[in-house]
Image (tube, rainbow, N blue to C red; front, side, top):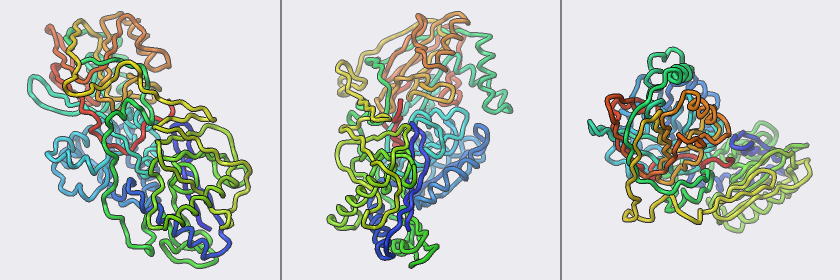
Length: 562
C-alpha cells in the first residue's frame, strides 16, 4: 500500500486529503513509489530550503502555535528543509535580512506574522544593494498570524495558515507590486506592500499605539474614538492617473500578466541523498506491514509505505486542482485541472512516464465519486498530466462516477460546479503604460479630506470581504487611491459600514477613486495628520510614492474565487 496526499478545496480555502492505493505485488508497489518520486523530484519550482521568520508578539500572539501546528507539518511532509527564527524586538528582521550573507542557502523566506512583520522583512531585503539578484532566486511567503492579515487574504483569498503553507509547499509563484515611499522633508525611504492611509487611517493607527495592551481590539476602539471626534485635513494630491477599470484581480489575471516577469524556480540542490534516503519531494519511506520495507524510493512494498503528494486534485502533483473528496466509499469527487509544466519527467523514460500518467488517470476515473460542493480548476495554456493509481496495480477505490477536468487556455479561472469565468483584457484603456515614454500626465486634486488612501492590493480582511480597494490588482504597477472629502459624521459612518458589506462604498458624492502609477501628497494649512504605511507611522505628512511593478516574488497564485 502507498498513500498519496492531495488538496481538497472549498472556495479559496485548501485542506489536505489522502488516498491509499493497494498493489497486487510488492515489486509493483515499489515501481509506483519510485516512478512517482522521480516525477516529483523534477519539479524545480518547489522550494527545498526555507527561512521561516516568526513574530511571536503580533496580533493575538499565536504565531508560534500557528507555525507549529498548521505550517511545520506541511513543510515536513513535503520534505522541505527549514530554518526557523523568532524575532525578539521591533526591526530585528529588517536589520538581520539587510545584513544577511547566507540567503543563497534558501529558496524562499516565509513570514509567520502580520502585515507589519512582512513589511519589515520586505524592507530589509529591498534595502540590500543586491536585491535585484536576491529577488531572482528568493520568493516570499505570508502566513497570516497578525491582526488583519490583509496580504495573506489578498494573495490567497484567505488567511488560513494551512492554505498558505500548501501554496508554499507546491511552489506557487506570483509577483506583486510594492511602493517606494519617500518622506519629502527628510528624504527617508521605506516600502509599502499593502496600504497607505492619511487622515482617519493615520489617526487611528497613531491613537492605537497608546492601547497596545488591548491587542487587536485597540484598532476598533481607536476607530470608534476617531469617528466620534472627526478631524478634517487640507491637502494637495498630484498623481499620474491611468484608466480606472472596475475588474477584480484573480488567478490568471490578464492585466497583471502583461509583460509578466519570468517564473522563479528553486535552484538549491535537493536535500538528502539518492533513491535510498527517503528525503526527496514528499516520499515517506518505511513499511509498517507485510511485504518488503526499507526507505526512500524503494520503500513502497509493504503496508503503510507512504508517498506524500501535494498535488491539488488527483493522486499525483501533475494536476493543478483539488477535488471535493477522495476515493473510497462515498467520498467526494475530484475536479482536476492541469497546469503548464506541472508534471515533470524527472528521470523516468518518456514511454514509462506516458504509461504512468495514463494508468493514473484510468484509475481515478473509475475510483472517484462526485460528492457535490464547490471545486475549481485553474489552468494555463500548455501541458497537462493526469494522476492516480494504475488499474493494473490493483488500486482500491469503491466509489462510482468519474473525475472531471475543467480547463481553459490562457490562465482562465474556472468556477465551481461547471461554471467557467474568464478574465478578458479590457477593450478600452489599460492600467499599464505601453512604455516609459507613454507615462500618463500629472493630475492634481485639492480639498479638505476626511482621509486619503492608497491601496497596493485589494486589502481584504475578515471585516471586509471585498476589501478597501476591491478592484486593485496585485501586479498592474498601480495603486488605487480613494479620496473621502469632508462630509458629515453620519455620511462617513455609512461609508464605513459599506466597506464591511458587499455594497459599493464608492457610491457617494464625497468619495472619489483614482488609479495611479505614482503620486505626491502635500499638506495644506496648519493642521496635518500622519501616514499609516503598512501599519507603521510616517511622522511627516508630505510624501512621494512610486509603484515598483511586480518586485515582490511570492509563493501565491491570487484569489481563485472572487
